[in-house]
Every structure is written in structure tokens, then in C-alpha cells.
Length: 494
Ligand code: BES
Ligand code: ZN
Ligand code: ZN
Image 1 (spheres, rainbow, N blue to C red):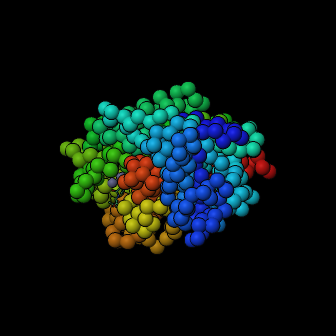
Image 2 (image 1 turned 90 degrees about the vertical axis):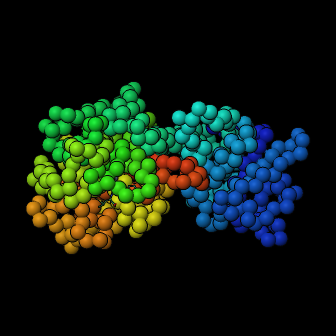
Image 3 (image 1 turned 60 degrees about the horizontal axis):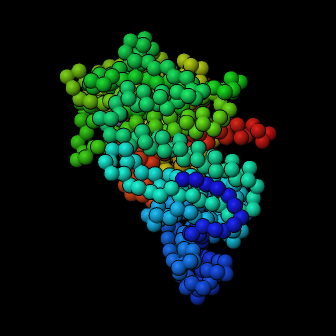
């Protein structure tokens, strides 16, 4: 795939993004005059619509890509259209395509709201993510022709080149997260997750430390040790440091890295739990975010922590009723071994504060009930209001949405234990995602700017649509990279 710029409309195929109000019932259209020779219908401009206009011999083809109502055009709709267009171009084996995004913005009177550069970034991201497929283990991989896409534009080369660069960086970070989360569970154990990650960052400015075996014990990482003890593949904590500006406050990005969650002795009873191989999607998200920051050479001071374990039932496994004594003084009754995510995140939160983090964001596939509350388009977020607001803002920018839910003090009583400070499972059948957040808050000092993201229902999708491909979404990588990057962007604009 290559992206270029030019003024000359020369390719065999022209992609024309259109809006639903570009074509009226009677066929009247605001579209360029050459398109008026075709009989166009309003539905061709609807979100998700794709229409091929095949040229006669010697003429070029056009692919109309629906973007919905002109007044609601935003970077998300451009990203979505790009994913849909990318798959159609691959399917029809086209090699050279042109697109004019500046013309779309002008036609929608959006050229002042969305810059051409922003539209180009969104298009590149959507295209790369929408045409992604996880085919590592297929004997016969789908053969796609090498597509060369030219943006028809009069804008400055440097500006658009930078826009393409960021689009590629964001897409590649999310693709790294998707690749990790899509791995089958026998191909990605805690150690392999860590090795693959370290190998990925080998040539970058990222420095890695691994805590396993004795060093895990020395650090008092009782959650990881407990959750991992039923598996023959031992648990570990991976610390990745990326610091290009020491004067910045240290930000910790923490990911739940359960490479498979059977539930442990509190075994899951669902018919098919194979998607629990993606219970490390939070870890994948923070690894993807770090990839974007490091590859983009963003000025930042970040530590990424991956709490990796496999949750298995076994003669050695963690038993319901066991007591864990965390080094911050909190004792925990393990009421349910399937509530393992919060146990390992607690270790990472304590470790982040030990390292001097001023702010910390944890991201995890933590509870079914978060999906029941918000569905599959929004992740839940809890925490200190100012950091939550910054993440919500980043989510809007990259269209990885988060919705703030309250930390209701009264619900803390639901975590009551008869013999420990708290239990890892609520005794009341409501607000399950919030009680998980309240559990985590027990490991957060008041001075830490902390946010917790529950992305359980966003980890994967069943079919390709817009910039999503079937399988892992890579959710969180672009969101957290944007969150960290916004500080640099804010400071450089001051
Ligand atoms: N990994 C699961 C949560 C999950 C659900 C992730 C759906 C992805 C998709 C988590 O460890 C879990 O089992 N949570 C339990 C907690 C309960 C036992 C308190 C849940 O949400 O039911
Ligand atoms: Zn679980
Ligand atoms: Zn889990």
C-alpha cells in the first residue's frame, strides 16, 4: 500500500466519497458534472453504501462511497468510508486509485471544520485498519494487489505527508494490538506475550524490565502469583519505560494481560469461551499505544505495565476463599477466581505508584456487566474527573469512545468480606462494573490521578464494517496514544 499526492487525475479508478444529500430524489446532484451522466439515487450516499460505476473500455471506473448526511460528516465517517472503500478496492483487485477529499469537504461546507490534513489522516487510518486481516495461520493467504492511492489535492506536500505519517502510525499501533489479541491461546502464553513485546521494541527507545518468579515475590505481586498458580505457564509483570522528556510527570498505562481466562476453579460455564484468549486486549491496547508514541517520537514520560497470567483450574490453582495480603496493606478474600483481572491490576497499580507515577490509566476486559450497561460502542470509564475528561476528549478525537460512570461510595459495602478488608466479588447483583472499579480504587492513593477503563465489550467484532475487520478491534491503542500526545500538542500550542 502506498499513499501519494498529485493534481492529475490519472488512475484507472476514482473513489468519490458522497453524502446522502448530495443526490436528491429527482436525481439533481451537487456532484461533479461528469457524474451527472449517471442515474444516481439518494441511497448511494448513505453511510456504508458502495456503488460501482463501471466505465466503458478506455474510461475509468468510479466507486461511490456513502458517508451519510453532509451536516454530520466528521473524521469518524471518513475513517469508516475509507475502510469500506479499501475492502471494495481489494476485492475488485484495483491497483491505482485516486481520491479527492478536499472536494468532499468543500461540497459539504466542512472545509473550515475538518482540515484536509485531518481528513487524510482519517482516510489512511480507516483504509489500513479496514483492509487488515489476521491470516498468520492460514496456509493460503488472501492475495491482494499492491494498491497505490493518490490524494488529488492542491494542498502543501509537507502538511499532507505529515497527515499520512500519523494515519499510518495510528493504524499500525492498533494493528499491533489486533495482532496480539487475535493470537490463539496456545500461541500466546504470558511469557510469549512479553517476549514478543520486548522483541517489537528492541530497536526503539523503550526499555524493558520483567518481573517473574522470585522477583515477582520480592515485589509482593500477590495477585499475579495467585491468579497464575493454576497454570503451567507462569505469570509475569512487564515494565516498559519510554522517556524522552524527564521534566514531564510520569504517566503509567496499565493493561490486563490474561492470555486465557477459563475462570479458574470458578470455571466459566458458557458454551464457547474461546474469546477469552482476548482477555489480554487491555495489555494489547497499552502496547499499541506505546508503539504509536515511540514510532511517532512523541515527547512523553510513560511507563507501560503488563500484568500477564493465564487463569486455569488445576490442583495448584487459586481457591475461592483464599486470602491475599497486598503490600499496600489491603487484605483480599478471593470470593471468585473468575474475578481475576482486578487481582492482577491491583499489583500493577501498586507498582506504578512505587515507580513514582503521577497519573495512571488502567485498561481491561474486566466485566460482562459493563457491556450490559453501555453496549459495544462505548467503554466505561471511572476515576478522577480531570483525567477522565482528558481521556473522553481523546476518545472523541480518535472515535474510540468512553463514557464516564460514577464511583458510588455506598456500593463499596457490596465488597464486604467476613474475614478480609474486601472481597474480589460483590455480594449484590447490581453495578458489577462499578464495584470492580471501586475494588481497584482501594489500591490507588488519593494523590494519583487515576482512571480505569473497562473495554470488555469492545475487544472484538464478528464481521468487517467500516474500519473494523472481523476479530480483535485493537481498541484503546489509538485512544491512549492520543491521550498522552494531547499533552505535547497542548504545550506546543501554548
Ligand atoms: N474476563 C472476564 C470479563 C469479560 C467478559 C471479558 C466478556 C471480555 C468479555 C472477567 O475476568 C470476568 O470473568 N468477569 C466476571 C467477574 C465476576 C465473576 C465478578 C464477570 O464480569 O462476570
Ligand atoms: Zn474472569
Ligand atoms: Zn478476565
